[in-house]
Amino acid sequence: MSIKYDVMSSKAEEFINDEEIMETLKYAEDNKHNEKLIDEILEKARKKKGLTHREATILLDCDIKEKNEEIFKLAKEIKEEFYGNRIVTFAPLYLSNYCVNGCTYCPYHYKNKHICRKKLTQEEIKREVVALQDLGHKRLALEAGEDPVNNPIEYILESIKTIYSIKHKNGSIRRVNVNIAATTVENYRKLKDAGIGTYILFQETYNKEAYEELHPTGPKHNYAYHTEAMDRAMDGGIDDVGVGVLFGLNLYRYDFTGILMHAEHLEAYKGVGPHTISVPRLRSADDIDPDDFDNGIDDDTFAKIVACLRIAVPYTGMIISTRESKECREKVLNLGISQISGGSKTSVGGYADDEEEEENSAQFELSDNRPLDEVVDWLIGMDYIPSFCTACYREGRTGDRFMQLVKSKQIANCCQPNAIMTLAEYLEDYASEKTRKDGYELIAKEIEKIPSDKMRELVKKNLENIKEGKRDFR
Ligand code: SAM
Image (tube, rainbow, N blue to C red; front, side, top):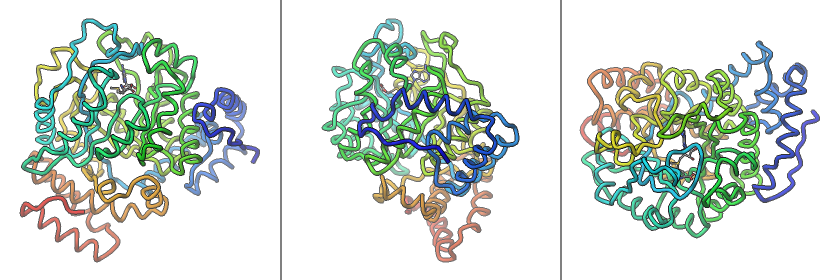
């Protein structure tokens, strides 16, 4: 096959370059009806070891009905084989919406004078975390605007320390992921030392020109600094990084190729690809109307993107947030999503204090407003195991150690039992009567699927322990 791409530069910003992306898009456009080539790519994809960005973009563009059916079928198979029916659940925690950037799509932009600015004190963070723990969450994603005066790294570090220190009657928050602006190697090292899970940063768009227009002022304007952030994070010792673009800002085909080139860059130069890919879509917000942006995508295109990413990078987790509706989430869960947020609030202080919503500090409107218990029962109803597991990171299975486990499909042996046990903890401590009943019925079915007799017996024993009040088995 003539698809080749020479690795040209060790710098992310040069590696993910406009010339190669434009060539890829042209190549994909020219070949979107080339059945022979599409069959060759699908044959390679069936080996479940991934595709290059060029190959994956051809699949994305392909509009032959039967081939698209094969693409969706394969995405489902890969999802099933590598991730089973487990869906990891988490919630975002907004620390501060002070921001010095001028992002044109985000209501936190510094010119927005009518949004209510708020930064949580450590006491307020404690209240938020207890409220999140009362819902059953064990895994958080910290969010903050970029503001060196109001939200310096010391504030973020102190907040992480506070979160991990809060002992709840049912145990602590077990994993804190962090989504804050691009920063220095030194600061990434500090985040690593503070015990974060994944460092997440969305590229928003890989198109430099569009990026600079969308970020006209503030430190985020610097495309190179933003694009190189994951390299610095890894240089600072962070093993697990999460990438993503905000679909709706720029042409989706361009950014789809960009994400995959970013993954190739990290794999080639840092030895391990991204831990997760997020697929957020632009939403309405305080002074933001998505219709003002020309590049919105419909649900079918969105599903195709998820399926093609699943095929292209089988070992990378994929995250969908409550920006998407229940119906849309339902459509893409089996195509490749492995993590979802649930019961989320995007306002600062919104978990402990419902009135915050009215105070107008939220980042964007949600499409899925259901409480966590409803989300959990909905997943169970579709035979997914909602998992509150955080074991890999706490057992040091991060970076390439984690990837090796996924690649050898060994991860299923750790994840399935852990998913079942953490779901049982949730059912005991937080679930409504209906969710509890549905959950234990699912567990009874799932337990029998654990291949090893020894492991199955151990899980059964631990489930008894969980019913008696013991927690945190791994
Ligand atoms: N401040 C950090 C930064 O500069 O990257 C990240 C935190 S921000 C709270 C998280 C993400 O929300 C952004 O990266 C952006 O993709 C997304 N976002 C901003 N405005 C949005 C909107 N109107 N709809 C959906 N997502 C939005």
